[in-house]
Image (cartoon, rainbow, N blue to C red; front, side, top):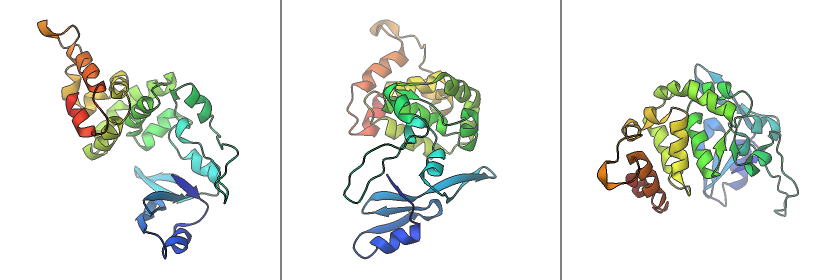
Length: 227
């Protein structure tokens, strides 16, 4: 994704004559240019449980609004497409090297702002083939009940993205660890510790993890059906 100090109006004016421009996220200050997402500097405020994007002064305020440290880095690019350093105010590069998912700031506050971040955190763990730090796990477990407030279609998008990772089992195991699997896929949760019978050497849940990880992620729905 690209972020800029330009406003959405300025972005549209610059590209509308020679490129395909869609103001698909106007309220969130996002413009699609030839299929590439370009956002203005922004920060979030929350009113009555709803997120409202307002203009931010600089890239640091923009990065502060992110959910996880590994998702809060930026690379400044000059007119020649060159870059020399990483803007990383939350030490996301170090967490990425450690393969650790960690909330920015207070994890309880981040989850209260959007409980779906519990599921996103599990997906990020699968994406980097890593783990979630202990403080974040505690907050996710204590706040997992908030997932009952999330519309199912938001879960669907996160699940399908997780199916494109190398090992989606990391995603499911993380959901199980933070007590979120029962809220999202209760039927799947019922397979945990379910007797395997005489035909397999592992419990049903463990067998599903092994089988699903062997399927290509090029077709997420087919892979999901395997689990």
